[in-house]
Amino acid sequence: MNKRPDAFTLLENGWILKVHPPAVTGSNRVLLMLHGWTGDETVMSVFGQKVSPDYWLLSPRGPVKTPTSGFGWLPVVSGRRGEFTDYLTVIEELDRQVIHWLDFLKISTSTIDVMGFSQGGAVALTYLLKYPDRMDRTACLSGFLPQSRDINVKPDSLTGKQVLIAHGSLDETIPIQMANQSAQFLQKAGAEVTFCQDAVGHKLGPTCYKRLEAFFAT
Image (tube, rainbow, N blue to C red; front, side):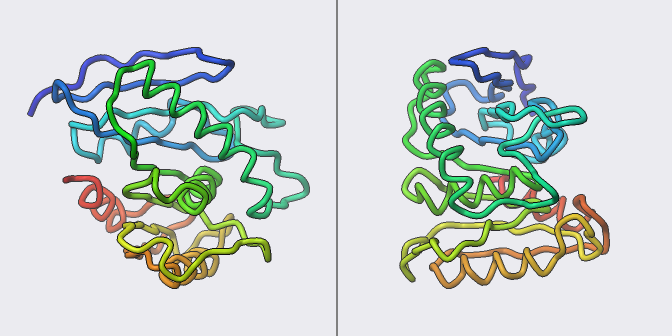
């Protein structure tokens, strides 16, 4: 198997992005990897090892500094995770930046795959609902779909979209019921949802790691 070139970091328009080029020259496959609360642009690399080597791995740093250490995508106040509308501004800004990164890196593609962990998973699913034509595959790891009465999705709006929901049945940070509700909502919108769970807490277990590897293998 070809080895990936060394990763490098970009500072563009106030955003920090870690870029891991593909092992396959000329590849235009892109996987946007979104960390969780208190993470940064480096922490998703463990998941990046599980995907096909022909991906460009783009790992941005969230724009919000957390009170302890690390970063997030929007503030967490008194344990409140935020509703769907709270995420939309973040998604719009992130999508504009993704388009800029693709142009800067000379990657010729109009669609991307997205993987997010925890709060990053909420960003990934909101991204899918907001810009379905920009998405191919979406993976939500230990995450959730932000809820709101303002979500207006047509029954067939996600037809043909593949989604992986991977969660720990013992997760006390984001209960697995939230993952089940997310999967049901996406299925009603027409998405092809693969659901995986392991008897672990707020992380991925061995079964879901294998599902993740298969999901982004081809």
